[in-house]
Length: 114
Length: 117
Image (cartoon, rainbow over all chains, first blue to last red; front, side, top):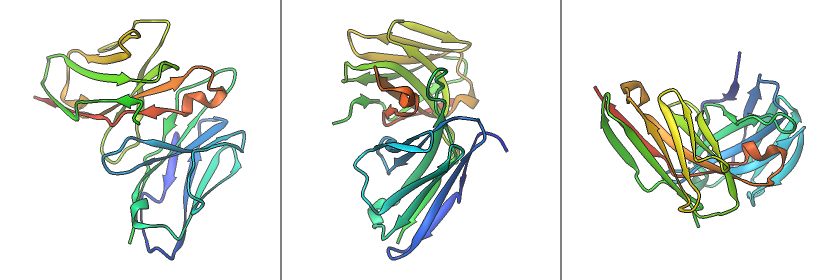
């Protein structure tokens, strides 16, 4: 596989459920990101990881918990979400450092909280 | 407060004509600008970018113009093709944002471009 792959593509979960979104990049990048796109709103940056270390958390509620075990994998653990958390969640990766590259995005996970 | 704005939610153009997508920004710290294109059920894909030290960047049918004094940029597609029909997002990166800056994007709301055959 090439590029940035996200699973699952679609997810429906109840407010008491715990689920995880997975992202994998095959581009050799060292930085990964989670974005959220709610209906009729721009993409919003949630988390930034650089060399597996979280370097940015844009005031995201603790019911969203990211994990980056290595520079190729990124997870977003979800628990006790609200219906307003329903959105498209996009993962991206880039090369950060000497040879910066533009961010490459995955196809996203369409999340519905019921 | 939205720092990057695309005020036209949609644009319809005839095949072969020019498509012009506009973007305005308010943060004077932005110094690198990108356009992404998104098809349904796919993630955004990078299209073209421009640094603030330039006022024009061209790549094939796509040209981006930057007017720093007006805090305005535009994407020109000529000639437009039906395959260009997609959502186009303008994005910006501030100066001195660090090594991960290229992924820390501030996006506009997007403009839906429809190119009719």
